[in-house]
Image (spheres, one colour):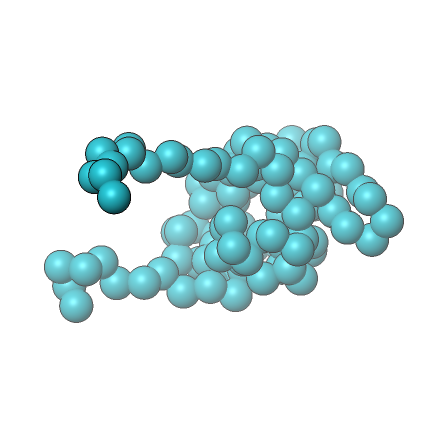
Length: 103
């Protein structure tokens, strides 16, 4: 048997997020994803009951939520805008994990 050279790792990044894959990709449960994130996305595809959104769009929405939300998006905005990333995560049902050096 011959020795094989180690191969460099292949990095795979998803292009789309659905309510089925949102926990694996974003760490957000499907219900908060559908209730908080999807209504703020501009381009949403629905395949039956499945909701599919581009990952770049979801990242934009999450970044907007973490900074207090868009002023132009007042209809879909939550009554009291979160002021910190921890508040955004709490509303989405998640908690920030402590960094490894603080453990």
